[in-house]
Amino acid sequence: MDTQPYPVIAERVLTPVPPKRFFSRAHGRARDEVPVPSAGQRLVYRTRNQLVLDTSELPLDSPTVVDASHVSVVDVTTDAEVVVELVLPSRDASHFTVRVTFLCTVDDPVAVVRTGGHDARAMLSGYLKGHQRIFELGLDFGLEDINDIRRKLNAQIRAYATLSPPEFAGMAATLASVEVMTPEQVAKLEEALREAKQNHVVKATRLTNEQRLGDLEHIHRQTREAQEGEHSRSLDSAQRDHARQELRRAAEVVVSDPISVLSLAYSAGELTAREFADELRRVREREVEQDLEDLRAATTHERDLERRRWEAEREDRLRQHDDEARRALWAREDRQQALEIEARRADTDRKLAHDLRRARWEAERMDAQRQAEWAREDKQLDREATAREIDAKLEVIRELAKHGHLDTLNLRLDRIVNDMLGDRGTPAVEGAGTDPARAITATPDEPHHAEPHHAEPDPDDEVDLTDAEFVDDDRNTKVEA
Image: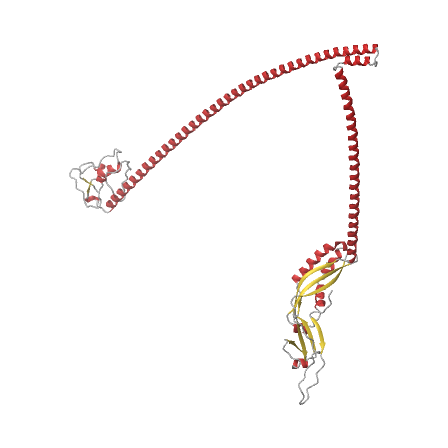
């Protein structure tokens, strides 16, 4: 790992410059006393307990450079890598090495020198050690769990850097990566396992190749043996073919007749006369038996053919009869189903017609009831209107009687009363010569009550009670007080 310091690359103590003598030339520091910064570096001078940043404009004889006691070279490059290594204990009394990389950038070189931030690696190491949970994670894992601890530590350190980012005076630091180095024991073990695996692969490959070679040799031997066997069989077949051909020729000579063969054998001396006779008898018997067997086989075959033909015809007749019976049954079922459907349709139509007639009758009955109710309501309204009209007229008459106007008025009261009473048979109002007991009188204390009538009053017979008197030459009645 690189051990170059950061962010303060170098520090140098400057020797005091002798004071300027009178009438002496101005002098400054030598070139080798002040370090030369590169493009990504800045000089910070300490002069009389003050820090001054060199902006590349201070000459060597400037008062700041001459009076400076220290000079520091500060790295101001952007995103400089700073690697911090931590050793974490493991479960099996070993340790994990964690390498954390930060990207640092110096924003204020003067603040860095003032606060003594000469070693960013030490500051970041202290920052990480401030999170105790990092050192406790390794206790849950052994060296064989290197991949699990990598994921855990990566998540833990990133979460810590997100929630509590590092803060240093004059410098900004951001987390770049987290690496857990493979322990030496694990590396050796993995290397040994890889070597063992490779050796195993080599041995397995060698054994596989040897087995394939043996299989190829075995197949070659089997192929060769098969070819040799095929050749032997071909020779045997050729010999048998030759023997058959010879026998066929011999049979052709004797015209394919066993008796001729026997005769030929007897002539050749291979058979005695007795053997020849016995063989001849047996040949005859075999021929007779063969003829009988052929006859029996032919007869049996003919009978079998006849029986199969009869059974096939019988099956056809039975199948045809069954098909006809089934079609007849289906026809009867179809007719029965059609009759049932027609009956259900007729029943449904009758029910529907009955429901329609009943609904029509109910509607007509309800209409008749509503018409009757409306007629009764109209009659009741007419009676109430007539009663109100009669009451109004009587009220007018009472008012006239109350003020004493009826004794001087000649009114056609008989017609008014008839209009009010209708056709109830009430006696008409008499004139002056009638019985006083039958005269209609009205006093303020005895109001006259009349029965309401159902006949509507004639508009031509309305009486204007506001006039002083009514003149009628034929029916003039004087109302007494």
